[in-house]
Image 1 (spheres, rainbow, N blue to C red):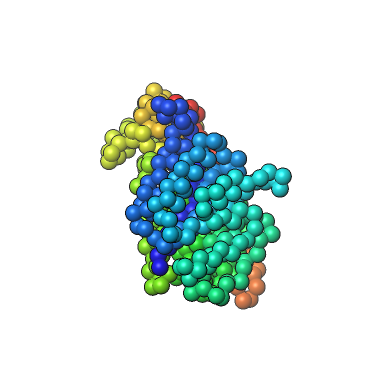
Image 2 (cartoon, rainbow, N blue to C red):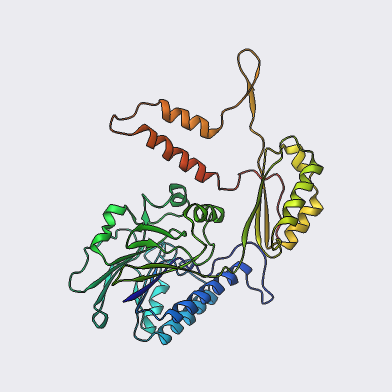
Length: 396
């Protein structure tokens, strides 16, 4: 009894200002291609069930083009897998902000797909001895009690598992449903399919975030950092055998490469030396930067040096890449102590670490764990682009 679990498709997602020859936003087209590739792979696997854990669309009011792409691919899935159970739940991006706005998700019911759009629903598939509970990302939904009449019991939910999802990620893209690993009670289910967090990750032996099918989060470089830390090979979906508990991640070939050059430390470097270092990083990049999304973090670069960088070369990089982000970060400021000697101003991380080590805490709280957790959150936050970019950016 094999189940495929995907989530966070985000059809209609747009980014940057590049257009395809047909006038479509390039990243919107990339996301649609990734979705089509995923459906191709799912059909080839011929599973007994397919569940989609939310965020089919990037907006609760998607464009006609996004609706048409979703309808065509889900119709193809329904046609090619006529005996399969197919269930979709609405995610936070699919859900209208007001009750007066109707949900587009009901469209898929017209082609024989089970949909939980506005409330928790139980779907029974007796021919597969399967029951699926779908929990959409709608305020007021509670974690359901597992059904008992079927051999296979699956929970599909779009939610923030607070002890799994990094907190900075949760603050960027909030979910109406928050829960914990223990409250999910995975042991009571045959499988728990989660959506919301865009990085494939294990919640329990039988509970997973499948991750998104493309890089559509508000912090792409945070996704890349988390994937590296969790040793995830990119974006894709999950195949899970409900009988044996076997889990397999299927990677979907990326529609667009996202690459980081550097980081580059520009301390004590002249503008010409920084220009030369950037050029070396670009030239040595295997596969080049053409048509890719690129970020280069330059640390410890004074404003006056950043202003004198070779603007023509930077414009050329931006023409070659789909998007070239130059993230220039100023040196840490220094201060003078009471005796007038120069001293480095403590970094934010150092200040927080020292405060956590010194502040009174309850006796039953482990201070080492507290400090380590605080440092982890701050280091995760380092993956965000700096608030001040030294070089103004223009797409096109």
